[in-house]
Image 1 (cartoon, helix red, strand yellow):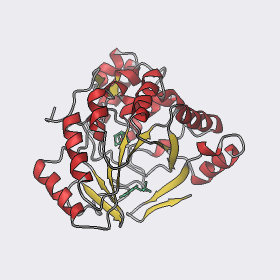
Image 2 (spheres, rainbow, N blue to C red):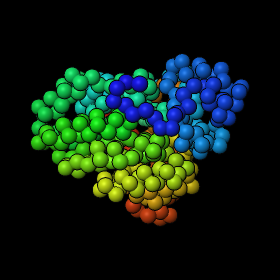
Image 3 (cartoon, rainbow, N blue to C red):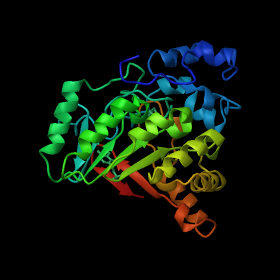
Image 4 (tube, rainbow, N blue to C red):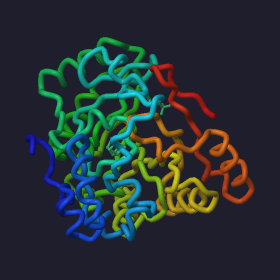
Length: 323
Ligand SMILES: *Cc1c(COP(=O)(O)O)cnc(C)c1O
Ligand code: SF4
């Protein structure tokens, strides 16, 4: 465990043998899961594992390894949104003039089988060394056009509160940085991490927005909802970020339930992403026409506040466009 990352509490299931022993995968799937584990990171935190009823249910599909991940379709790309090409210094991705991504680490509390950064993320951490972090601050400080820094990864909320607080303090001390944003799966995947230490680290002078990644209503259990309530109680506006995924949320009922679960948890749906074509993710693909149809059919059935923007991140670093 690299210094500065809080140990997951409770422990996550990481080895295929553990997934079989826990009854999440049938024994016949062991060899296939081991082949996947040799290439991609696996972690299912206990809180999520308890909510999986079947490998093919909306949570099993998102988090349990499947041999289909080892088949790369012709259109799939190792770096679908060109993060690497747009990285002027390690840890920074700069595509739009007014905002940058800062990736302080590449570890996550859970590894999603459809992740667009799946070739980069893993438990080794990919923690930016102090000198690289200084270079990232200097890059931002030297560019007055940058008004927003978006912490992503990996998942910034698994950093120790001390380290996360230090990063936020450095960023908000840069005069032209007007607001901050964090993208995280911790509130649904590891809600126990949202304790006093983390909440205190998230108290900033400048506005801080938190975009929570969730794709199915069942991710919002009582612990997740309580964690989100604690975050909202500290004055942190909560945004919802989802990916349209075949078998997980590609029906009117599943999307309506997801967006309602977010609103109940004080989370405003922000983006519904078209899946990025990362290697081995074809089984999750939903055609954009189908996504448009689903959202159009939900109009009138759901509060306007429940609607996210359906967004495509164009391959090759061309940027996001609404679909
Ligand atoms: C997605 C993304 C952002 C954030 O975009 P918003 O539309 O503001 O949410 C910023 N920089 C990069 C490189 C991105 O990929
Ligand atoms: S939490 Fe985010 S970065 Fe991590 S595996 Fe899931 S989608 Fe990828």
